[in-house]
Length: 205
Image (cartoon, rainbow, N blue to C red):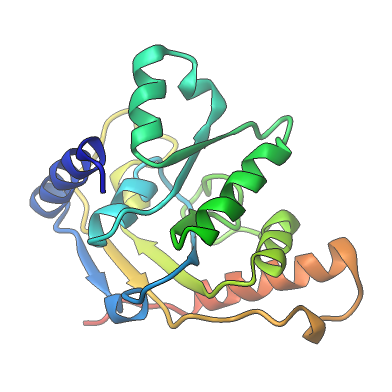
């Protein structure tokens, strides 16, 4: 964990615990050595730092490519282990970077829904996530955030008081041969499977 990442991690962890009462459940499911895809629901811009703050190791994030256009933000986001992506023009280079970081033993946070939910409910998954899961051949840890929508939804301009719970499910290893069809159809089934596993997660009392 480099110094800028460590500093940001410590700051947001303390802020999240103090202001949002951040708690994590099922941490034993993600505390293993080696690569993994952390597949999480997406309702807020705060989702990536909330997930990152619950873990003691550094993980890999994604962010819009436009956020890297300024010198300081590019420097900071790069050190925060963030990969730039262009939703309008997908870059094969970003996918190659993901596979490289996985080979290095890193855990990568992904959002199967592709964008933030407009109402806080789980949305349809994107087939591209299924392709990533199939080709990565690493464990997939389903993750679900509760309270993040109330903290900073699309309609909020500033963070609101909320109780945040991050739940980690048991690792799942995808076997592409178990799904019918090929190509996009099979990838959609895989993406739907991981969303179903996310939907099953609930915080402990």
